[in-house]
Image 1 (cartoon, rainbow, N blue to C red):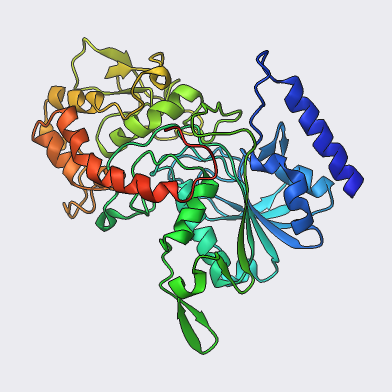
Image 2 (tube, one colour):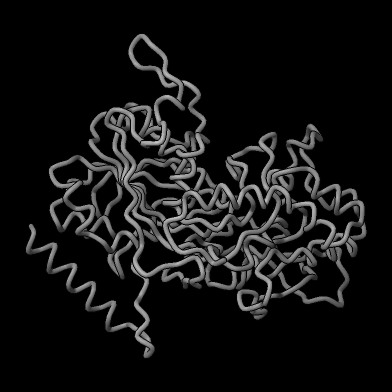
Length: 423
């Protein structure tokens, strides 16, 4: 086994070296690539892996690599979009047997969002390896929270194989108010929070942010704070983060695989924190086009704007404004990542509101008409942003209102960083 592991590691390092740019900048190697660091922890254990299509070592899926190395993968847990990453956003995915591997896949985006006692009764150790995009309403960090909570409740050690955050080079947006908590925002963090999955997990534990107020053990109760302390341990539970190599928060990491069906390229990944807010409005956010989250608009906007028609396609079975000619914007070729100020671009949202003829129908309203139920407010993390838009506030005025909570969050975040910061 040691020879096999050593051989794979040497090949991986050689391939990485061969791909180095002329400046001989060391390549970024995600945690999964550090097989020597976690294989000894998996050997002889019954393993469950939280994974999707991004869970790879170079071009090989981690599940395949672990099976070839003799690791006993008992089951796979899958997030939104499913294990193979092809389901629509919000589509409920059932559990099934994965034909290529023969391993049961349990969906944690459907009837439930975290493993149960039955799911984990035949498991010795949990492994989490998902490529995130560093945006609060991208649901993988909500899935991570549920996974950690189950690991604690059922005394299972957890290994997180860290991956770079492609939006990890800045922090911006309103900080979520807990009255607006939902699966698209579970914690008081800004829309762009500048942390990797591993760093975020450490913050959940260190700041005692998890939802389990009490965990029952036989005939007594223990508060979660007492369980975790600062050791991040409880009985058999222990968090181990395998960090990336050669990554910093100043790095502009290019994703090798699309993280979900409607984030097909880096332009969509960079624009997503800004334009996903359109999901809470009647405007198309570009699903059903060649450039989701880079194209957005509505049939009622002026016909002098960019035109497009959302259609049915993979990952967009029922796109908003399907088969309707829409007018709006195409920002796909605007190089947002190299602009001087790395921040959300509110000007498009504000402009869309100003140009939209029927203001009362701009935001998608829930049946209850409660501010806590508006999907836009769940995405924003508060009702203030909607109120500011309706009141005609400028982008500068809106951004200024975010600063006190952003400043406080940055101080908390610093305590859990595993990599050199961008500031």
